[in-house]
Length: 254
Image (tube, rainbow, N blue to C red; front, top):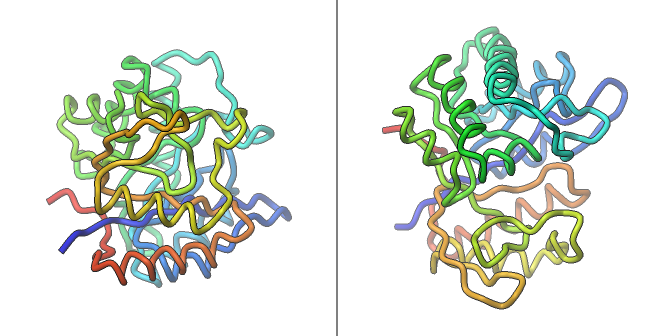
């Protein structure tokens, strides 16, 4: 039987600003990447999201970002490897405190937004993130874009890594994600996104924006929790995968 992890970026509300449908989405996914305060997520939101995930038996992961609340962590910044190492370690530690308070553990770390994409192509930044994760807890799984520098850095640091693919993002021919600023970078049609997800899991490939075939070997599929239809899409995607004989299971470093 084929297996895949379904992960979603959650806990992205901030103060009185509510974003996402966390409770409903948690019923469908196997892993939650929880915002750690730098792009979204205040302490109260982090605490509540950890509690919700733990109650659902959903694996908990830190979702560290560049310090960019206004831009939701999606704007690239001129940061050094030392800065990336420190901000990653800081955010992992913050989420760990809430996980410990709920008698649960973190399972993985997945960088967010611009930091994720920068680390996918910049070995120095990738190494800084991997080093921070390894220093904190070598049992944590490092999640990154399939085929990226981040996964290579994770392996070099002795970490278990998980290759991630996206249901609702267009790919370039080189396997990188099409930047959000470009037209059609995000797949808004649910049927098309589900078709892409099934292609990734069953055939190990996607069709890039230029029509070429991109080979992708993925351990986990990402659902974006900030989309207005996130809960409905998560339910439809899970149902389609199960109907295709795919087991939904959280990441494991064993």
